[in-house]
Image 1 (cartoon, rainbow, N blue to C red):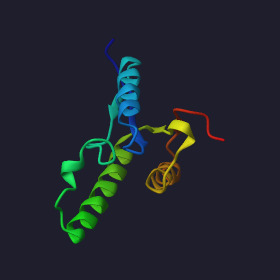
Image 2 (cartoon, helix red, strand yellow; image 1 turned 120 degrees about the vertical axis):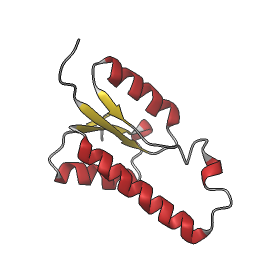
Image 3 (cartoon, rainbow, N blue to C red; image 1 turned 45 degrees about the vertical axis):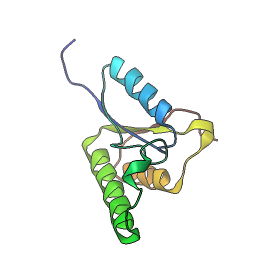
Image 4 (cartoon, rainbow, N blue to C red; image 1 turned 90 degrees about the vertical axis):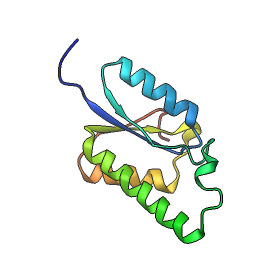
Length: 112
């Protein structure tokens, strides 16, 4: 199949690494281009933060948050990894950003 593919950016807490990987696989197999996080700071990529000075840590987190919003800009829609209904403040910010841009938001689990 060759054609126009929908672009979907994954959003959610990086503590859900396995769920990110599974969603990426399933959405790709459904014929979508999937954009994900670059690292899993809450789920195994601890070496990124170890020994980083506090001011650099803050700037790095701000950069990563901004980069993810740019990934949302590139997407047609977002898919939220909300295992157990969990949506943290960063993810909430990304959902609001996507909604303000008129992008559809889909969820892994029903939002209550």
